[in-house]
Image (cartoon, rainbow, N blue to C red; front, side, top):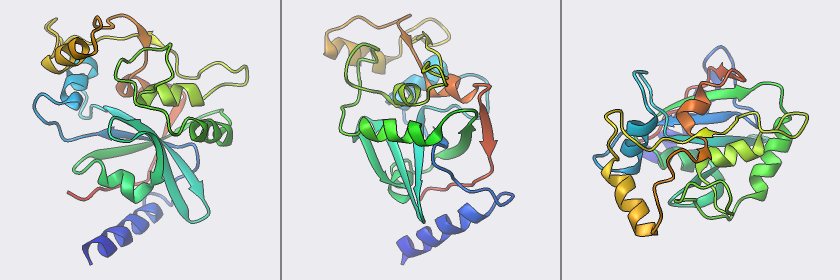
Length: 209
């Protein structure tokens, strides 16, 4: 019964907000509930700011008829495609914001995203391997008319504002046997969410929990 009520609420959310609906190619940015010493907390420490929302994840929407799917890269699933309701369940208690990418071929972006399904999550956060992290997947899928990414790379930062390295990153990169990729070109959801090529979409998404 709870799941049925949740799905009904999800369906109603598509109809609210000035009549806007999700479209293929829309991006969902996720501001999660933070857990001490977790990856999301470490991401916020390195990329967050005084904004009311600090996004640590981004995903791609695919709409097929009455069905809504999400394609993204997570540590739990790698690059995967799953129903929107399942995606929302993966981020309990989170805040979601939907943005639309201007002046791109959304269908082509979604097609590229589907072609990456099955790849592993990139815990090394490097640009020159086959694995992908969430905003890296988005960057590779959204190209302008010349074939260049609409979301450019920038030197990545892993340090907290006080210059320290959060324990999560220290332990992760030590376990991987690599140096912290400070300054390596890359992307992050928070910076991506501020891109001038995005416009807000008034669709309310909610998760259980």
